[in-house]
Image 1 (cartoon, rainbow, N blue to C red):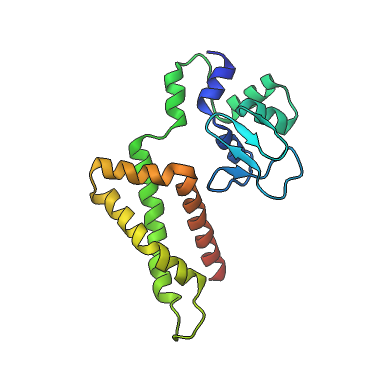
Image 2 (spheres, rainbow, N blue to C red; image 1 turned 120 degrees about the horizontal axis):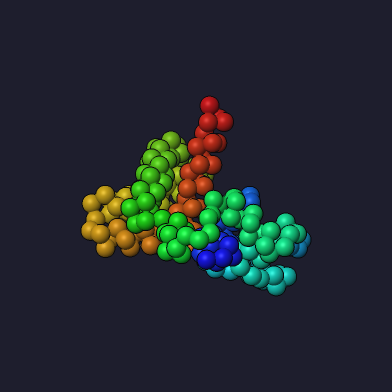
Length: 196
C-alpha cells in the first residue's frame, strides 16, 4: 500500500480540517480557506471536499497540499505523520481506524446526550419565566424543545434493542449532529465555569 492509499483510507477531509483548526458546522460546511469566504461555502464529504464558491475540490491530500502550499507527496507525508499512519499495513486496519466501532459510538452518544440532558433539566428550572408575561429565556425555550427527544434517546441507548440503539446512533452521526452537540455542551460548560 502506498502512502497515498494509506492516508486516503484513514483520514477524511473533515478529520484533516478539524485537525488543522478549521471551524466546521454540524452539516459539514466550513469557510473555504482557499478564497475570501465570509459564509461557509465548502462541503467536507467522506472522501472529498468541494467549495461552492471558488470550485476548489479534491481529496484529503489535495486539501492539505493547497492549505499549506506543499506538494501532494509532502501533504501525504504530513498527514501520515500527524495521524500516525504507517504504510504497508493492510487497508482493512486503516479503515477500522477511520470509523469508530458501534460500542464506541454508543458510549460517545450516551455521554454527550447525558451531559446535554443534565443541562436541559437545569435550564427547565433555573431559566423558567418568573411571570406569565415575562420574555422566555432562550435556554428555557431550548430545554422545552429538546428535553423529551434527548430523554427518549438516552432511554433507547440504555434500554433499547440493538436495532433501536443503532437507529439512534445513525441519526446522531448523520450530518455531524453528535459532534455539534458535543461542541455545544463543551461551550455551555466553559461559559458556566466563566460565570462562577
